[in-house]
Length: 115
Length: 116
Image 1 (tube, each protein chain N blue to C red):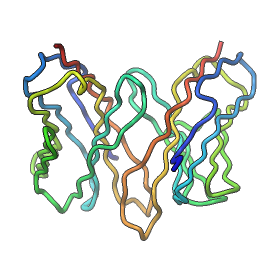
Image 2 (tube, rainbow over the protein chains, first blue to last red):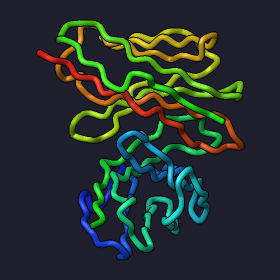
Image 3 (cartoon, each protein chain N blue to C red):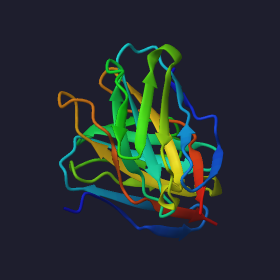
Image 4 (cartoon, rainbow over the protein chains, first blue to last red):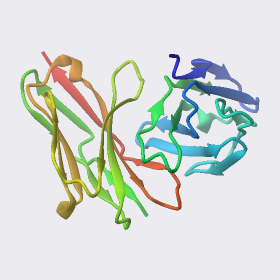
């Protein structure tokens, strides 16, 4: 049972480059989320998705793009990376509406450095 | 707006001491859910507990216990007889029923260090 995986685990990129972080879950969870974790800010929600082809903004969406063509995948793209996007990115998933509120399960994280 | 406050940024205790991590939340929802997550030095986020707003029973799981008090909007976490392996950052989080949205609001975390 692979659960929820993220790739790459570590990434160094240059300012202005496009970067895509991948997230894959094997539980068929309806909801998926992207967070970033920064010192002093805890975890902040970037985008979330309630189902395939349904996405919505979170607290800090600027500079990011998401898509969800398949239930199991939820890639996060930085269209033109900036140094302020240096962070640890976590993907999470949970069951959907009508299935009771559930905890979110997190992937292992991707540490992104923008130089 | 929903908010979670973990006023203790860092706590350091000696092994076998009891330690309580504080969590205070704000919400206008009448139904909401509270969570605790652990982030060990390896970096992953591990779910510890979920508590519903309509269930104020405290919970105990081994050395861990949680005290939920709606009157003070608090959901504190106590580790009894702490061990070095308990060293981690602990996050409290709040989820309200907002048009079906399952967004969590996290506190800033408490870094707990257990010294041998």
